Image (cartoon, rainbow, N blue to C red; front, side, top):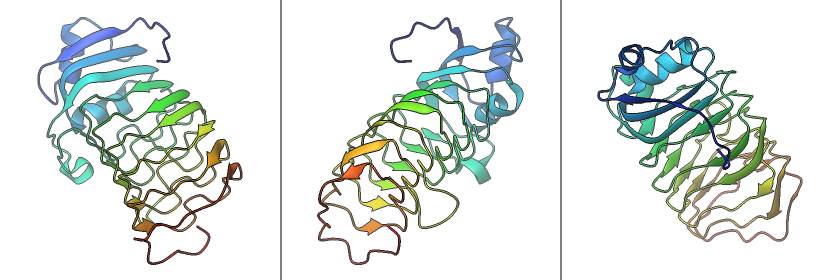
Length: 234
């Protein structure tokens, strides 16, 4: 967390769906845990347990976690190493998060309206997709946003909000060259982003209002050859 030492309770979860059991076995009260580092395997069941039952959770380190198949397939699609849909949606206690090194994707609404998340956000290398509303409404982010070179899909065509809509990042926006899809309202209302807007040469889709009200982005824009339509209010 930006080099700040944190005193974590470290819990090894050997099997997905066993996080609560592992915390209890370590003689810890999960209702009072504030700083948690998890190792081992977790699944969608464990994400929803943290969201709904760990009401004082502030700092979460998932760096060494594997995400495996869980029971809530209608939310998480059971994809390995994907943060499931609505994993921490509306979790106001959460202040800091470190994402898994082995992460492949971040689901719809995963951190939507976690409005007290602060600092910078580093999306790990290996992530290829960040779905709609993933971090929408995380207005307290006040550092930088780092997107991985592996990212190909950002957002969707119009469901919910954009993945970074209304985020408070204050940094230069750098889009990875592999990015093919920038969805609806992806960076809408991110007024702290600045620098010259460079659209990746591989881009084929640019959604409506993708950069709406990003008033500090400047410079010229080169439209990639693969773009066939520019939607209103982009």
